[in-house]
Length: 235
Ligand code: SF4
Image 1 (cartoon, rainbow, N blue to C red):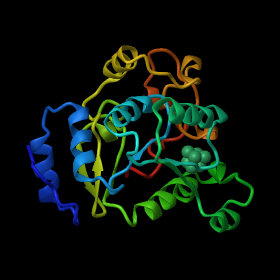
Image 2: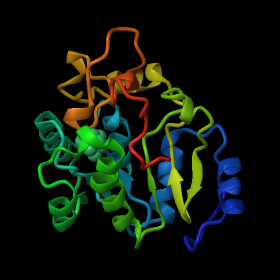
Image 3: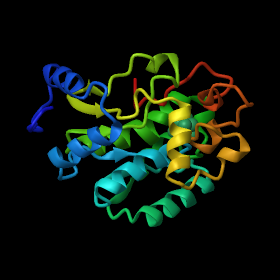
Image 4: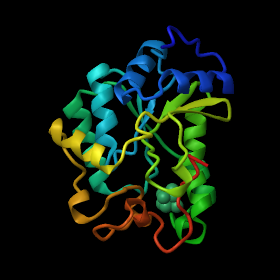
């Protein structure tokens, strides 16, 4: 186990060493280590407050409810997601939850009618998600995601630690499957997202999220009918 990691500029060697050190470890161990080694908001949890988000939020809150959590408020979320975010904030006593938003002038210029998602979903994700997150990351060393290998082909080789544009990306649940998530939620009696019982198994912005049939891939409800499978944060 690594004793101490200086959060200077992470290198691929650092990432390789971290992956070797945490091979087979429980997600909580990864988070505990981050809480000890990145105590000043350097590596926040970025949460969508979607279908599975409650797992990492619970783990983080158990370790330290002051741990920084970021929510990308695209302006296109379901009202249910916003109320679920507020409910979980109170439930876990999160004291350091912050919303990041697209720049108002950018929105006025590039998406004045709020319909960019129809004509160019990639540009819309860029405007409403990637650019705001990049801005928030400028002063940080990395971030924690809830991605898992089983979710899409693009994520099949996901490591717990990655390097992207000089930032650490930490995926504590990389090896988890739907059964692990369901068992964790059940064992900890965690409140679920109100849209899950209606078939929304992966939840992003309202215009780009559809319910899926039983047995279908959860992420097949995202950008349904197009070949888009990622919003750009993870490409
Ligand atoms: S998910 Fe849809 S509405 Fe949300 S930012 Fe991307 S294209 Fe826009």
